[in-house]
Length: 325
Ligand SMILES: NC(=O)c1ccc[n+]([C@@H]2O[C@H](COP(=O)([O-])OP(=O)(O)OC[C@H]3O[C@@H](n4cnc5c(N)ncnc54)[C@H](OP(=O)(O)O)[C@@H]3O)[C@@H](O)[C@H]2O)c1
Image 1: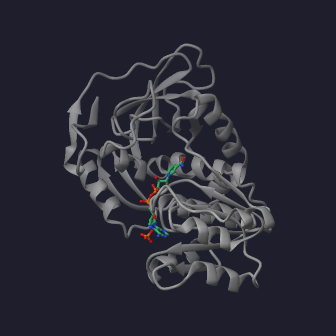
Image 2: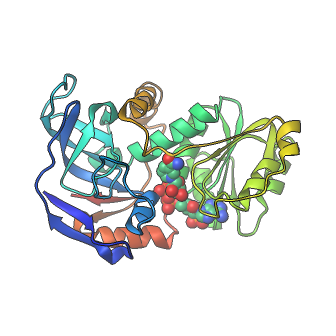
C-alpha cells in the first residue's frame, strides 16, 4: 500500500510518501481500501511528536477514512468485501489500506460521497460523546461552541441546532462568524473584538448558557464558568490556550456547575462502538435527510499531506481538510 509516514517529529515536510505491506485485519476487524481520509488537528500534534498513538495502534497518522472493505478478519459477520464504510481509527488513515475494528465502522449515509463520508467519524464521534453524552445537552437548552468554524465546531453547531438547541459560536473573523450563522448558530461571536461572556450574558438576559464546548482552555476556563447558567456544564475537548487555570470553586458550588472533559482516541473499540450505535440511531437520519452535512473546505491528494497540514496549521479554514487516495 501507499502510506504517509512521519519520518521524525517536525514540520509538515517530515510527512513522506512510502510503500508498505498491506496491514492484516485481526479478529473483529476489516481491511478497507481507503478512498478518502480526514485531516484533524490531533494529526498535527502527532506529527510534532506530542500525541503518540495508543498502544497497538498504527504509527501512521489518520483518525478517519471512507472506502470499500477488501477483507474481513475472523468473527466479522455484519460486513462483507465490497461494502462501503466510513470508520473511526486510532491511527493509520493516511494510507491506501487501513484496518478498522468493526465496532467503529458505519455505513456511508445515503446520498453522501466518499469524501464527505470520510469527514464524519472523528468530529461526529467527538461531538456526540462530549456534547450530548457528557454535557447532556438537551433540546431547548442554549449552548456556546468555541472554534465554530473548526471541523469540530461546524459539526457541533449543526447537530446542536438540528436537535433543538439555541447555539452561539465563537470565531476569529467576522466572515467566519457569518459562516457559523449559516450553519445554524443564532449568533457568531468574533472573539478578537467581542467579549464572549458579555455577548452571551446579553443574549440570554443575564442567565448564561446551559452548555459550553471548549477547545481553548487556559484563560478561557474562568470566563467559561462566568458564562454558564445555574446547573451549566463545561465540556473541555482540548487545551490550545494552556492546560492550567485558576478556578473560582465558589462559583462551581453556588451555581451548581459541572466541568467535564475527555479524549476519544485511547478509548477501547467497545467504548467507541457504543458511540457508533448512538450516531447510527440519532445522527444518520439527519445526515441522510441533508439536515446536517459535513463541511469540506479543501481536498488534497494523499501525496500532498504536507500541504494539507500547512493549510490546517495556518488556520482560516471553514470545516474539514481532506486527503483523497
Ligand atoms: N478531545 C477529543 O477527543 C478531541 C477529538 C478531536 C479533536 N479535538 C480537538 O478539538 C480541536 C478542534 O479540532 P479540529 O480538528 O476541528 O481543528 P481545527 O479545524 O484546526 O480548528 C481549530 C479551531 O480553533 C479555533 N481557535 C483557536 N483559538 C481560539 C480562541 N481563542 N477562541 C475560539 N476559537 C479558537 C480556530 O478558530 P479561528 O480560526 O476562528 O481562530 C479553529 O477554528 C483541536 O484542538 C483538537 O485537538 C479533541
